[in-house]
Amino acid sequence: MDAAERDLLTDTLRKTMTAASGQALDTALAALGWAELLTEQPDIAVPLAFRLLGETGAHAPLINDVLLVAADRPAGGTVPLPFTGGTWVVWERDDSAAGTTLDTELPLRPVPAVPPVPLAAGRVALGWWLVGTGHAMLTLARQHAVDRVQFGRPLASFQAVRHRLAETLVALDGAEATLVAATDELGALLAKAAAGRAALTAARHCQQVLGGIGFTAEHDLHRHVRRAMVLDGLLGSARELTREAGALLRAGGSAPRLVHL
Image 1: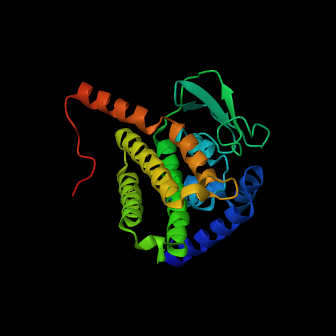
Image 2: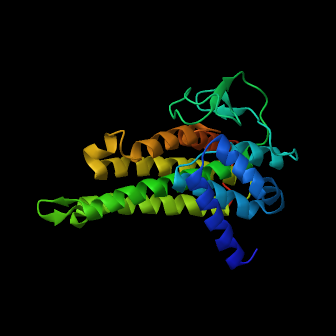
């Protein structure tokens, strides 16, 4: 896929995700050939689709397809997913279960614990979603800082505000670098942890920049904050995965190089 084709695909996916969400988006993406793209070009499909889900605020049960295809099974079904705290959920392909979690738009249904499928590909996919969500929050906070005037000056002119926005961008860029470098299970685990931590950092800093307006139901920030909290917990939270990575490194007695410079 050349640059022009990739730009066209990006525009098509962005327009589709802006126009639909949930079951309707799942159907639309299937019609666009999502399953074929994921099977034939996962290195393009996963970062592009999941980051756009985060940036647009849409949702679809695509994590099922990523895990199924990685396990050499056909896309289109569902698979039980571990959630933080030792619980398990299924991301339904219809909207019947919506409203049962912190993020009331997501159709997640609790299920009994089951042996998991390999999770590395799913963790990378969720990492890209978290990065996209973080960038969506950063965009909202930055625009508010530019537009809002306080004490006769734009809010963006205050150093404390600029520092919070800069720290958010650094965290998101760092998480993106770990996702690009993730080539094995340990790399995927650390990348998901970094992305979760970066998205929660974005939520904290952007809420501070937006102030009271960020707490209102009318503002979009709260939707992205809830989404980040749920996605961070899915397939292991940043805190759980960091502990798991430490245990693996202690057991192995060494730390492998994750990126060869």
